[in-house]
Image 1: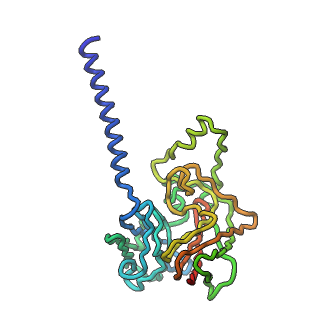
Image 2: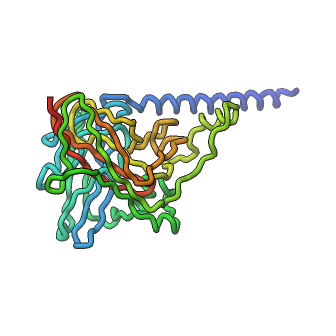
Image 3: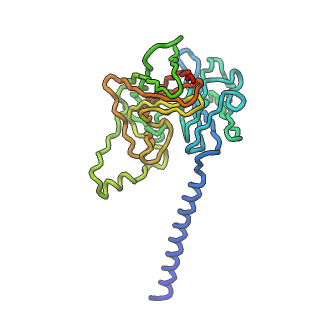
Length: 319
């Protein structure tokens, strides 16, 4: 073998090592950018839509930079809207990572080119989201399905265009149209909600795992192939804390409404998530337990993969 061939081989080895080291360094860098706690929460303006009466709603979400920490930030100097009322129905309890289209803020038909600001300070860092009625931010059902990963970016189909949001309605007495419940610390509160949907989009079916063979294990461990967020379509109901400090336990455990892409994360953005079985009558029970007294707002989201509908329950927890 000549000197030229040896040189080419050494160059190939060096190039391969360089690529491998670059990938390792990149993975280490990405891992170092993920934190369990101590990071800020980034409020996000998602866009707007116009209502039949000519008024508008501005849609907001957020990105909690933490994987574990769920900060509680009461409405006030660290969590407020301006101009106008500082309380616009925003959450005060923030779930991990990216949460899109979390809540809506109504604005009048004559809002014009004014700007609505949501200011949020978490772990000493202040971030602001700016909402306007700029044409670039108009949102419809296809945009929502695309942004949340139900559709490929910039795509649609007759099925997605025909889809209408599911509905969720908490059963039982209401006070002035609001659902209000009272319970004591440590005592389970049973909430029953009725969920209805049009069956669209069709859930993606996955063949069941067969045994513990190599193919099954490979499929279980294989990460998603999308380079952008992807979501598994299928109807589910998820209860979570929207406002209130304290540990709240939901039984059974709820599917996550936030973009957890880890395998077996009980999230529709996670690999191999399977939509739960919805009873024929649509009635779904959950038992909720609180460890501290106070006033809580619980958030129920019915999600069919592409679109969603929310309802809220105020719970007065006594000692």
